[in-house]
Amino acid sequence: MRVLFVCLGNICRSPTAEGVFRRLLEERGLDDRVQVDSCGIGDWHLGKAPDDRARQAAERRGIDISALRARQLADTDFHRFDYLLAMDHDNLAVLRSRAPQDVVGHLGLFLGFAGLDGRAVPDPYYGGDQGFEEVLDLVEIASRGLLDDILGRLEAAS
Image 1 (tube, rainbow, N blue to C red):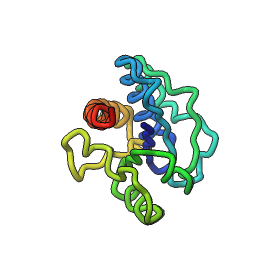
Image 2: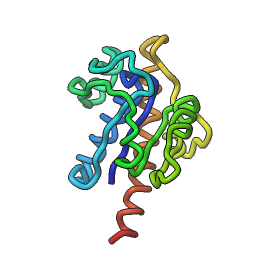
Image 3: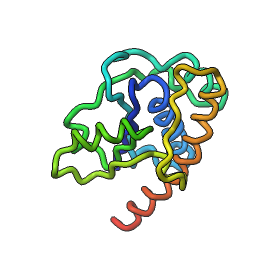
Image 4: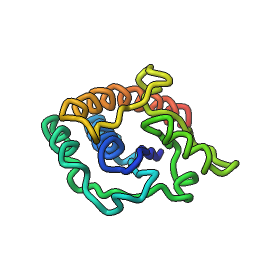
C-alpha cells in the first residue's frame, strides 16, 4: 500500500502529513507494509527542507521531518500510489486534471478521512505558529482515519 500527500510547495502541509503518518505506522508496526511520500504541485521549493516552523511544530510532538526534501508531483505518481491525498481543493483540482484515465488510486481531500468532508487543511505559510499547530491537529485526526481505511483494505485483500 502506498500513500502520497500533496500540497502546493511540499514544505509545510504535505511533509507534516508524511511525518505524522509515518510515526503512526511505526507505532502500529505497519511501516513495512505501507509506504509514504509527499510532494508539491509547484516547483518553487524543489530539494528544500520543510519550513522551519513546520519542522519545529512537528518536533514539539516528537516527529522529525527535517530529513524530508521537497519534490514535485510526477506523472508516474498516479500509477505508483494507492492514495493521492490533497491538502486543499486547488491541489485536488490539479490532481484530477493531471490524472490519467486509467488511474485506480484514491484521489481526494485528506481531511475526508477525519470526517471533515469538503474541508481543506489550511495553508499556514503566511500565518503565525498557531497555524502550524492547527495543521498538526487536523493531520493527526485524518491520519487515524486513513489508517483505519488502509487496514480495512489490507484485511479485505488477505
